[in-house]
Amino acid sequence: MFALVSFIIVIGVCVISHEFGHFLSAKLLGVQVHEFAFGMGPAIFKRRKNETLWSIRILPIGGFVRLAGMGEAIEGEVEDPQRSFNAKSAWRRWLILAAGSIVNILLAVIIATFFLWGHGVLDMEHARIGELMPGYPAQAIGLRPGDTVLAINDKKVTTWPDMASTIKSYADKPITIVVERPGVGEITFKDVFLKPDPSTGAYILGVKPALVKYEGIAALNYSLRYLWEMTKNIFSSIINWLFAGQKIDVTGPVGIAEMAGEAAKNGLWTFLFFLGIINLNLGLFNLIPFPALDGGRLLFVTVEMIFRKKVPEYIEQKVHFIGMVVLLVLIALITWQDITRIFNR
Image (cartoon, rainbow, N blue to C red):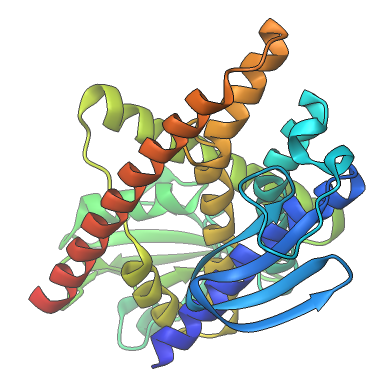
């Protein structure tokens, strides 16, 4: 139940923000909106405000904004031909289609910026100690949070990965550690023996990196850098999967529900970070030029803008229909894979 509630919150925020992007851009660009729906299947709640029907549907996965000119109008709806989606210029239609993903990505940036400002991230760029693990050598020899490791056995270290890999290379051999302590200066600890971690067997010193927070423009800058790197990794993984046969981990609604529950159990900040990552993934996924996705529709509009000629509507509809069938089959297979994995565990 906890995982289900967490999943509904995550999907609710992601889907509603995505569809709100379509809704707001359509209204601003003069397109009539028949319905704004959260969920799929039969409606369990309906309320009409002005010309738009607001609905909640029984299955809390997905949602849609039904625009005039995109599909058949429901009985009783009055459609203004001049405010039809298809009556608008190509660049207006392109913006409306892209707006959902743009809002998801912007929301991911906002969440990441807030996370960096309010919670912070582990500082991997410096070898500064943030926390000592009870029962390990670091605590026993008198290291303190705030100490910066300068050298291990006369080998200079500057970043946390440098320090970790250097320590790992000595394993069960004694090491000499040189640290700089604020207000004191350099301190040397000799003949320090590492201790194996029971869970991994690796010999460790027993320290964790410091948490660093960013403010204002710095938080925004670091969030953009981080999300850009993640975006590159996502698309490179997809390309390697398509052309090099590299295996990628994919998950569906069941897997997302499980991860949402775990994130929520780890606290509000972890859940918030997870929410940002899912928004980024949803925004990027919908931009993939695959039929039935926003990216597939964007591809048709882009072709129209380049060649100054629309692709015949019946061809586009058939392509999107086939794409939708393929997507539904893929979602079913991925969901079955998630369920099997959970039960096997």
